[in-house]
Amino acid sequence: MSSNKNCNSSYDVVVVGAGNAALCAAISAREEGCKVLVLEKGPIHKRGGNSFFTDGAIRFAYSDLNAIREVVTDISNEEATLIKMPPYSEMDYLCDLMRVTQGKSDPSLAKQLVSQSYETIVWMKNQGIKFILNYENQSFKKDGKHHFWGGLPVKTENQGVGLMEQLFTRAEELGIDIWYNSRATELAAENGIIIGIILEKNEEKIKLNTSGVILACGSFEANEQMRSQYIGEEWDNAIVRGTEYNTGDGISMAIDVGAQRNGQWSGCHSIGTDYNAPKVGDFTKPGDIFKKHSYPYSIMLNRDGKRFVDEGADFRNYTYAKYGREILKQPDHVAYQIYDTQVRPLLRKEYDLEEATFYQANSLEELVNLLPVNREEFLKTIKEYNASVQEGEYSPTEKDGKRTLGISPPKTNWALPIEKGPFYAFPVTCGITFSFGALKVNPMGEVLNSNEEPLNGLFAAGEMIGGIFYENYPGGSGLMSGSVFGKLAGKSAALYTQEQRSNAIRN
Image (cartoon, rainbow, N blue to C red):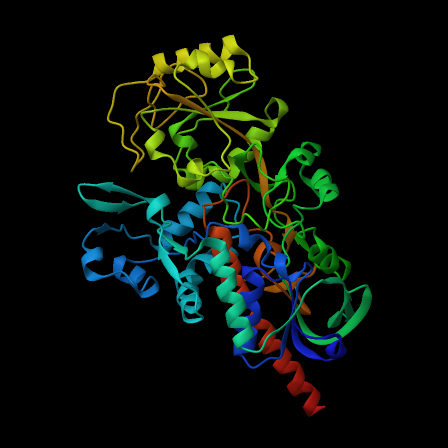
């Protein structure tokens, strides 16, 4: 951390934020020869933004297992023979992105994200990021081999904690300055050109001169007033899954100097999370440990004893980011994931953690007596569901078409009767991850004004970019977007500042 005596220094590039997108941007700019400063609003022990809380799964396009081995370098030849890795092409990625966003994702941003994904993963590996196979959550063992599915076979070692530790290590190796407890409050501009940034550090107001500012300080999900204003009053009741410091500061600063808004301001990424999860991200318990993402093998009931979504509509990778809001709509913002002993061994590891809230009983009648729900309706719904389950082969490795008939909502895949005890109920509520409304940015990370022209000297990455995600998103795409556009914004800012310097010399 730089001392206050350096506060009047001039930097080529100042990056606001210290998560994955921000540090990718800082490293990228530094590689181009720039003097770079990172501003982190929080203290050092709460650094890392939302990225710190992720499970590290990151979605990118790849051709085959050999391409994966370029990134996950410790897969032995023997291990490779036991892996079935379907290809996940750029077209697969793009189609998934456009499908889950209902075709609303900005085509130019979507194509940039997809086309740059593999190159960026390799770049991250070269920066020292350690990647591993996502065996636990994205593969099933069948016929002695691990069958991967869902286009998300890779994650960072030690989840988001490991990702951020490695990024901070790399930033420090490159000589990037990082100031903590430093909240950016205002962009300084002259004639539409960014010339500096104003911040508050240790109760002191400081103005820094700089040619380029990269905003990568998240969206506004931790700002209760903005959540209520833009997404809806009921979102006051949502748990904030990540950092408490993502309060929309960067978005507001950019709009004040003429940046154009973009994206779905009424939408957000939200999930079903443990009912007793912390109200904001707890930095002492990182790693996305409170989520509850095995719901495709469950039925979910609200307090009135009613189902409200098709739990088996698709793989969790393509539904979890929208089902959180459906839980928020339920009475008291709670739902219960119900499992029996047939599927209990299939549940993800977060269900086995000591932090997991659950109820267990040997019969459904005993289970429902433990819950604050409408007992009669709860049992009636389960009975009707069980009677509606159709014959077919149950296969958790694929969309098996084992479905219900005659009930609404249906369960389209993975429908098994809830009939073999012991029985389990996991209460979940809604946790907001990030909001979709942000800034208009071009594919190179330049922030645009109302005339669709770049605001000279202003760049953005990560959750600051609006227009990629609408309603939903393919799992792992947020982390990939942060890395791709962070790297691009860093290079764009570096080239811009170098051009400014050359112009000043010539003049």
